[in-house]
Length: 204
Image 1 (cartoon, rainbow, N blue to C red):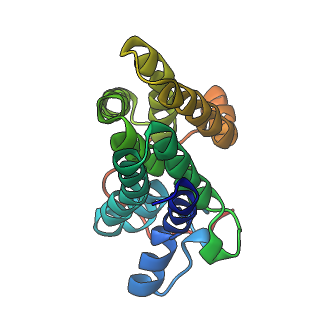
Image 2: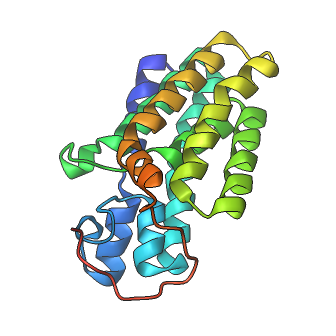
């Protein structure tokens, strides 16, 4: 299987907007009109609870894992990171939503690293969980986990494509969380709650 085909497959898989589709299917609503307006699992969980949020997180992770794992296994680490990066790009600008704003790529990024460099991905996930349990900010957890990826990749002497991919992913995640950084600095960022405490509100 050629690298180019795997990259295209990665983008198509990454473009599958599970947060949008599942909310449409179950609630007959557009998730982009509620909460943060994001189609990712965090926003779905905040607005509709874990019964919809957890499946979205799993599916968004899987769509990053599958192309990265297959490409790494059948071609090379370079092909794996290209396919995983394409999945992340697809999640950010989904083909199936006419390239409108998608998600912030965190779960898809985690899946891609589990596919191309499982140990790095596992360490990144551990950082996310530890920071989240301490502070309950999904955005802070995501950014610190992303920043940990290139450090872990270098310390574990990973192949250069993995190190480069980790650096790219860290920069991309930070850029997509610019608004969250501003809210964290001003003290207005919302802490995550596992239980939904109110009905879905329209995005501001």
